[in-house]
Length: 190
Image (tube, rainbow, N blue to C red; front, side, top):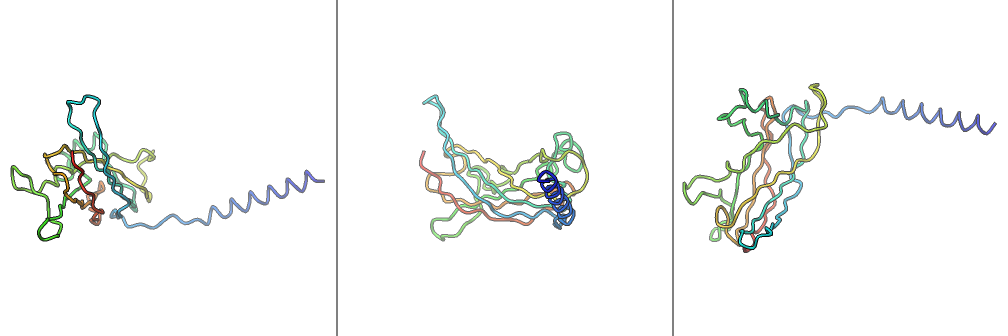
């Protein structure tokens, strides 16, 4: 009798769980990607060889969501139009660099010492398709994306610079997300 009650209870519980799972709605996101700031972290790397310059990397993590899940490019896709170089969409992760100006106390685009042009495009890059996708069916996608931006001292920043980044991403349909601004980090002394 106890076995019958236990079987009945487990069977009822299974039907309840199965029935409720059919009621869960698929999230409704825009087909244009949307992003939000998650975190920024500055890490110092010291090579084993004392003669080699130390370098820092900035890791930026963003949250993303996309209604049809067409994020990321494969190596093969990046070789064909409309993603092939020199298209701006050869990159799908766009970065602007802002440095706090010591006199005005405002953040302004960082400029190359050599060309006088904004240096942000040097940090643009490409991110791959999320590895959890196994087919090409359109489906909502949500998650986080972390990118590393490395630099040596004097090539872009100097010790004490307070920097922020503007970030946006594009999907394979060439929809460009909103642009977010990160928190700031202070570049440490070498």
